[in-house]
Amino acid sequence: MKNLYCWLVAAFAMLSLAACHDTETYADQKKKERAAIRAFIEKEGIKVISEQDFKQDTITDVSKKEFVLFENTGVYMQIVRRGCGEKIKNGETVNVLCRFSEFDLFGDSLHLTNNVRYFSSLPDKMAVTNTLGTFNATFSTGVMKSVYGTTSVPAGWLIPLSYINIGRLVNENDELAKVNIIVPHSQGVQRATASVTPYYYQITYERGI
Image 1 (cartoon, rainbow, N blue to C red):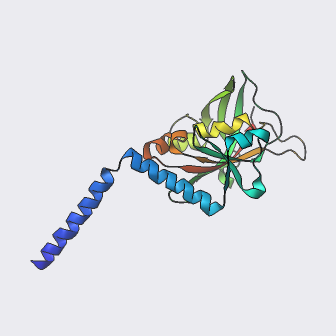
Image 2: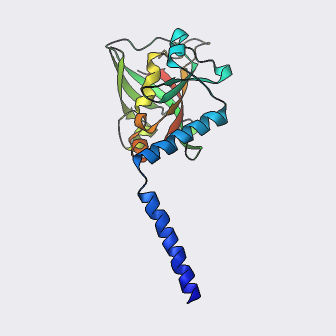
Image 3: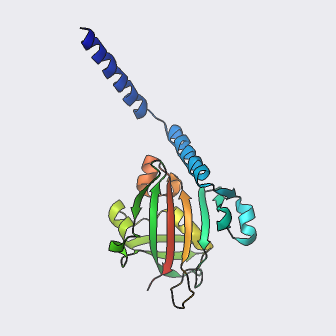
């Protein structure tokens, strides 16, 4: 009887925990997300600068681990390399090839990447249109489209396009644009939005054909 009582108490405790998890509010989830982002920033020694300071020269000092916070989206961005070539012009539609690594900030682990030998010749490809400084894009091929089952490009991926050049490697000293971004759920993939999960991305951008 005593063993049965102990088992019932344990089962009730497990059900209570499950019930608490099931009743977690959206506000609770956002609070956890903010905590995960703060923990990542502290762990990596990131120095957050304001959008106002950033727009004075649009530079993030990599040696100081600077990231600019865009308050209206919650995205943090570091420009590692501005890249060769030129920005996407107003009214222009460009194929952009991306190589990326995606890290889940809750697990602090690599979640998805095409930066491996198997995908070396298969970067993610998206068609990007600039309309008066607003960028819209859709994936046509690549890992993101295959894994997430959608052509939708995370809004966070498009924010750097206002500040970087999209070119091709032609000369010996040419470099592709590279950014690091912290993307909250509202600016991420649909799965991130549904689960209120923040991701960290390392991305290079190249002009396609």
